[in-house]
Length: 91
Image (cartoon, rainbow, N blue to C red; front, side, top):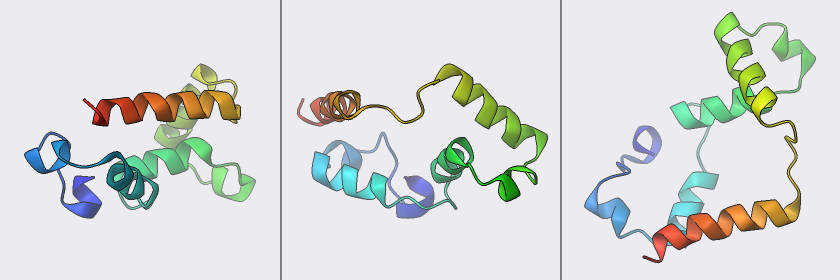
């Protein structure tokens, strides 16, 4: 969040943020942020890009995929996760 939007996750400004605003910012993160880059590495499937991955990138991707065998989670699990995240903002 800090790299792209200048918002620290433990700041008073962040604590006052609504779920809708947080979600909008999260969805808008690009691959130039640390979190966006991590997500991009984890989800990459293009063989042309994968063959140029560094050893560190391969490890990040392989570790995550090993620990998350169902990369494409079902809609119910996705909605449950979003509800849990939203509950953090309703406290």
